[in-house]
Image 1 (cartoon, rainbow, N blue to C red):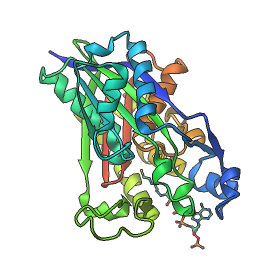
Image 2: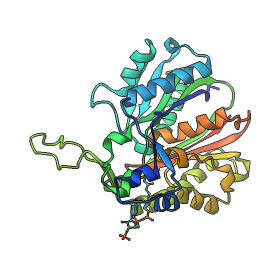
Image 3: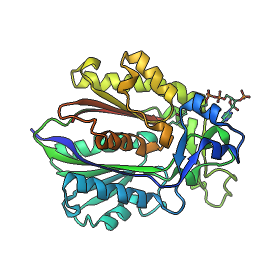
Image 4: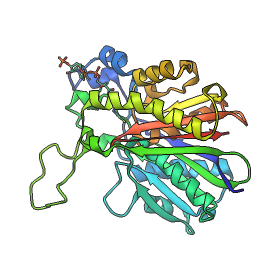
Length: 322
Ligand code: COA
C-alpha cells in the first residue's frame, strides 16, 4: 500500500526582529498586555524579502534535508494569504527559483490552516499515484497586509516560511488527515483588498489590511482545535495517550492552554514558539515542526498531531508517525 511521509523540513524567517516594546513606540499597547493576552514577545518583519523569497529558502533547505533533487519534485503547493501578486502564483516563482522543472505548481488559500490543507492534498496526490514527491509550503509576509495603526491586530502577526517534502513510501507516515470550513463565519477574519467584483469602485482606505473579530475567532479556535484533534485520533484509531506531541497553530497561548486542559494533554507536550514569531499564519505549523526537528525532539515512531485554524473560517489536523 502506498503511504505518504514527511522526509525533509526547511524554514526561513526574516532577520528583522520587532519586540513588543518596539511596537509600543508607535501604537498604543504594551509588552505586558501583549504577553498576558497572547504569549507573544516578538515577531519577524520582512524588510525587503517577499513571500516567494521566504518560501524559496525554506524549500531549498527542505530538499537538502530530504536529499532530494529539485527536478524530482512532482508538485509544489504553496499555502499563503500574502502572495507576491495575484498572478502568477508564489508556487510558480518558487518552482523557477529552485529549478523544479518537472513540477506542477499551485497556491492555495486556507489562511492559517493552509499548510494542513496542503498536506491533505499532497497525501491524496501520492495515495492516488498521481505524484511521488510533493513540496508543501506555508509562507507569509503578513506584515504587508497588517494595519500598523490597529493595535487589535498588528501585535499578533509575523512573517515566516516553512516547507515539508512529502514522499511516497511503504512506511507509516501520514496516518490521518481532516480539514473543514465554516464559511458562515467568513466575515470574522478578512483581508478585503480591492473590490474585484467592481474594480471601478474605489476601495475603502484600509481594505487591504487584515481585519478581525478577535473574540469570535477565539471562540471558534478553542472549539475546533479540540474537535480536529479528536477527529484525527478517531480516524487513526488512536487515543490521546498514544500521542507524543501536538504541534498547534501558533496564534495565542491561551488557545493552546485551553486545548491542553480540554484534551487532558500536558501543556509541555505542545510545541510552542509563538513567543518568538507571533502568528505566522500558514507558516506557523511547518516552522514549529522544523524547529522540533532541528532540536532533535522528533524520534522515529513518535505519533504527532499537527492542528490549526484560521480565516475562512477553516481548520484542520493531521496525525503523523515520524
Ligand atoms: N494593546 C492594548 N490593549 C489592547 C490591545 C493591544 N494590542 N488590543 C486590544 N486592546 C484592548 C481593547 O481595546 C479592549 O479595551 P476596552 O475593554 O477598553 O474596549 C481590551 O484590550 C480587551 O480587548 P479584547 O478584544 O476583549 O481582548 P481579548 O482578551 O479578546 O484579546 C485577542 C484579543 C485578539 C488577543 C484575542 O481575542 C484572540 O487571540 N483572538 C483570536 C485571534 C486569532 O487567533 N486570530 C488568528 C486566527 S488564525
